[in-house]
Length: 239
Image 1 (cartoon, rainbow, N blue to C red):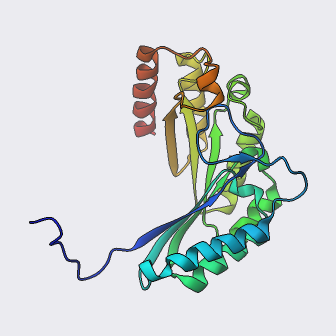
Image 2 (image 1 turned 90 degrees about the vertical axis):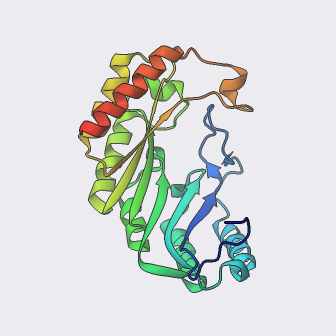
């Protein structure tokens, strides 16, 4: 088949990603487009929602009539936005796009922004999947990563996610500063004990233009990191 000759009778469905850029604190390993909210007071939700509407309106001619099967609201820390703002965002999406009735709608959440009523309100707004940035259930490791939550907050957030959402994901990292195999396996056991429908495992890497790149912490060597990855994959597959 020559380049440019492929023709589709029906265009494939779309997935929509919505970015919310603010965080309580910029993590030292993060190279995403995220920014610590330092202005004080409330995040300018309405101004940002208006900008998102304008951005989506500009793209409509390119995607008109295409079905949308999933929405992922990432960041940053989208759970900093109020449930009312998330409700408005999803209403704006539905008013412009052909969102299928059973669309998966995911919201990224930080355990440091966990509130029981807030999670319930996100579910009422139409979110049906939560992606929780736990990263570790070890207080020592969480402190080394510069996270704003502790292990107990992580457990509480996951318990509430299981209570309010039909599906949820846990983000877990390995090869963390001064982490040994025993600590890595303990983290994995803690995560799997919650029986998450989905578990995302990430190796900590030192990315350019981050604090960790400028001031590298002591990390496991490559052999140990590889052993951690194999052990994590094996245990996760067996769960």
